[in-house]
Amino acid sequence: MKVNVKILSGGVKEKTMEVCGDSTYEDMLESLNINPEIVIVFRNGNPVPLDEKVSQDNVDIIKVVTGG
Image (tube, rainbow, N blue to C red; front, side, top):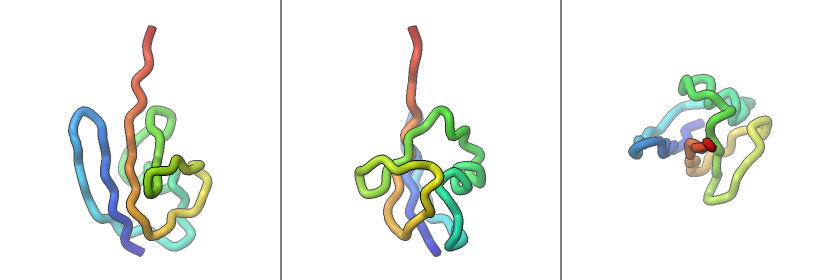
């Protein structure tokens, strides 16, 4: 299935990617070479757990910045 992905990390990258029907959001991040510990994944504006199966929606990946 095709998924529209927007990556927000010091800029905006948009792409459409093909994922298998049984892929999780964590699998999707791995294929994009993105560390799942430094991002939050949103589907249609709502955060999703990384072990949930990818659905054919718009996905936003936002880098989380922490520090002290």
